[in-house]
Amino acid sequence: GIAPVGQIIDVIAKFDNLLPLDIQGLDFGFSYKLPPTPVGDFGISLDVSKLLKFYQSPSTQVQELIDAQKSGLINPSVAIPGAASLIRQSGHPVWKWSSTIDYASGPFRAALQAQYVDTVDELGILDLTGATYKVQSQLVFNLYGQYTFPKGGFSEGTSVRIGARNLGDKAPPLSSGGYLGNLYQPYARYWYASISKSF
Image (cartoon, rainbow, N blue to C red; front, side, top):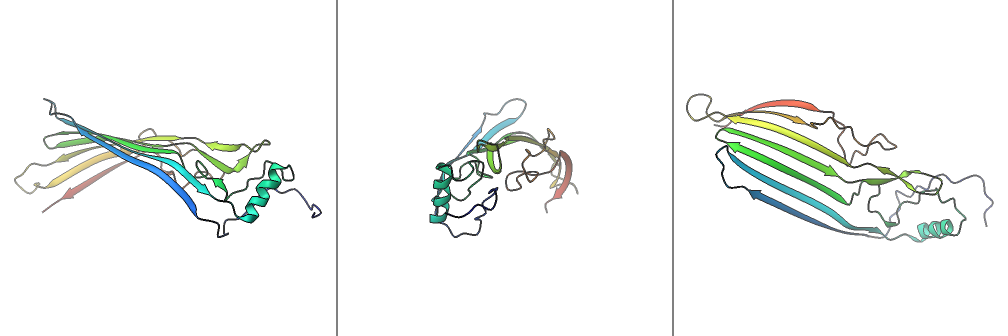
């Protein structure tokens, strides 16, 4: 019933006090240490998070917009945030997991870690059918080696560690704002070294 004044390109409702969120998920972990071998000790761990439900009940105003969009009064390419299931939307991936393989032999330790973040949908970019842009998943590897000096002398209790983060030099998946800061780190591959001593 209102005379149109232009084309709606976005709906901003970030500061509305909407109904409660219904969030459900599953976290589980696995850790196993292999029997000792002639070359050293090995262990593996896995931590997984699965998002089962992330639902925001729409407010009266948002529901009116959804109904208008379904009836064709509003362009289907207009994003209407703050309603229905928010799984995969801009920072709520279904799957996240990390796994570590560690090795120890006498004073030497090493570990290789993998970190995975599932795909998410970004509502800020839509095609003409209203389909959201899919921000790609990411798998990052970290590695370190550490040597602890044996007992006796000034070096006792001293550990030297050398490692690398983002071993494959993976850039954060592309999104409209560059990258999603709540999910990814913008750091390229880098090496580090540290020395610690306990008394």
